Image (tube, rainbow, N blue to C red; front, side, top):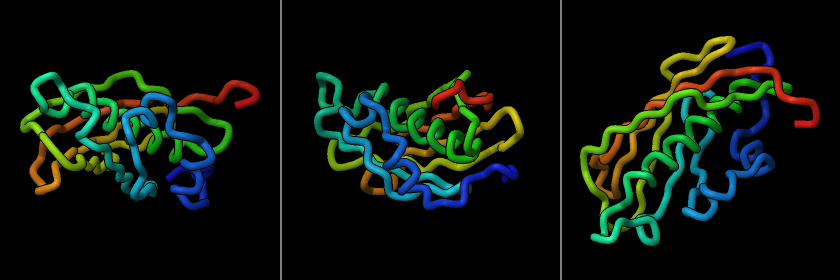
Length: 143
């Protein structure tokens, strides 16, 4: 944890910041946000490929949204985390219900974070593993 790490409630912080238009459009919903763990869900319905499977890009949106928000929460006031790398490995297809992403830090440094996001279906089966690296820098004035 950095000296500038926020002390306020993570969900409250995220609500004030906003999820972004894409995450909102896809039904992203917060469950938990702390420095040690971030959790959110997304519905399968409305986010499928033509054959009815949850879209692989949806896994990436959920993972990147979780990892980026977790990195920005960690960065603290006056700092901004921006994604520099994201990758995903899909191992199962969700076809209904919700998918849940659980984001945990692999590295929390002064200028870089790495988070792993495990995304599971309603039966708790891993569907995708996403890893995101964020660079932390000073926020532009007015942000």
